[in-house]
Length: 145
Image (cartoon, rainbow, N blue to C red):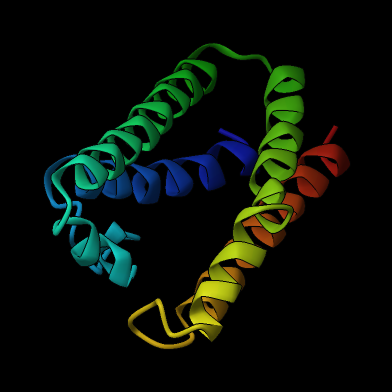
């Protein structure tokens, strides 16, 4: 297994923990649960809003599950070239976080809507680390050809 495969397995483990959290413990503040958002508790005051929030949380979990399972299939069946391009695709898809999600969570953090405080910075650095590790794996894969 090459560097991309090894990094992808680590990523899969973390994403699987997030899926379990979102499906079974959505209010958790661990494993990127939705409990870090103060609006999670606030939404419970309006059953219609809370149902929508729960629907969206489960939608995200389901989408992540599809992504995880497809990545597992790729890891078990793909040739080196496909793994290389999958690594590039992961870098791009993970980096998309900074386009819409990071500005929004940073704004919510500044507006005291996130607990713990500065969670957006922690999440931003964590995702940047994922990207850096995947870029390193892609470069190593490219150099080992």
